[in-house]
Image (cartoon, rainbow, N blue to C red):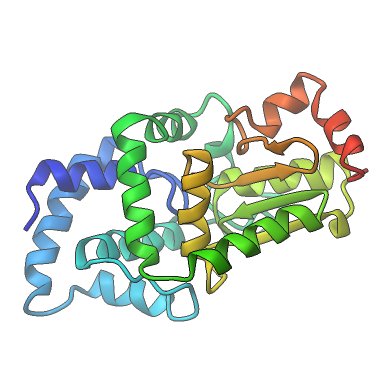
Length: 246
C-alpha cells in the first residue's frame, strides 16, 4: 500500500481528470482511498462498483490498481456533481458552470495542478491509465485531427472548462460546427491514450486542449494562454479568421 502522502498527492493531481477535485478534500480522499483500497482486497467497495459500471461504455482504464481506482472514483464524482440540463441553467449538462470562471477556486486549483510535481504526477497517472497502446497510431490521429480542422478541441464531456470553451466558440463567437473537431476523451476508445500523448506534447494533461490552425496549441479555457483571455484581449477572433474558422 502506498503511503498516505502519495495517495494525497495523487488525489490532488487528479484535479481535472474529468473536472476538478477540491484541494479541501484531498487529504480526506487520500485517506479514504487507502482504506477502500485495503478493503477491496477482500470485496470491492460499492462506490467503485458503481463507477466501474458507469465506465462500461467509456475508455478502458488500464493502469495499476491504485490509479484505476482513483480514475473510477473521479468518474463517479463527476457523474454525481454534474447538473441536469434545464431551462434555468441554460441547458448546461456537466459540472457546475461557475467552476469555469477565471477567478474560481476550481480554476486556481487547476492552475496549481499543472505545475511542478503535481503536473508530473498527473502525467504519470495519465500514462498509467492509458496502459499499452500504439503510440504512432495515436499521434497520427492527433496530428490528423489538428490538421484537418480549423479548430481542434480535445475535451471531457462533463468538464466545466470544456463546456465553457464550446459555449464561447460555438454560441458566442459563432463558429460553424463544421469548422471545429471535438474529441471527447472520456468517451472515445483512444481517449486515455490521446490525453497521455497530449500531455507529452504540451506539458498539460488538463482538458480542454485547444488547437487553432496556423497558431498551434493555444491552451485551454482560461490558461495556457486560454481562449477566454484571448477573447477578452481581442485576439481570438483574428486567430479564428486567419484559420478560416469564421
